[in-house]
Image (cartoon, rainbow, N blue to C red; front, side, top):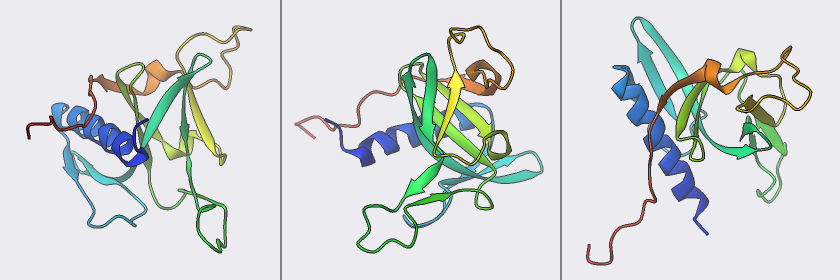
Length: 150
């Protein structure tokens, strides 16, 4: 089983790769405890981005839209959302090899976001966020393991 940090690093690498291929400036905040993972420069616009790993489940790319503090010894909050801290979620899903850029304003304040890849079973379209509408590129990123001879 991969370490969660390795999974997150792979997602950030895929996201940065796609953003740079699109010609955007990408800046990395210093330190591990910042509320955003990168700063995105697109033309005259500077925005804060939180990187997330998406997982394909039941026809949708699912990803967390809040931080968990449940593992802290005495958490004041169990969950903390990103409203006011970022403008976008950038999501990499290894199963689709796609990177999605989702404005936080498009997501309700819940713990998990979802982008539909397959049509819903009842063919509902209203209120459904389709992955194709947010996809900005594709990239295949393998495991982040050094060879034994390194």
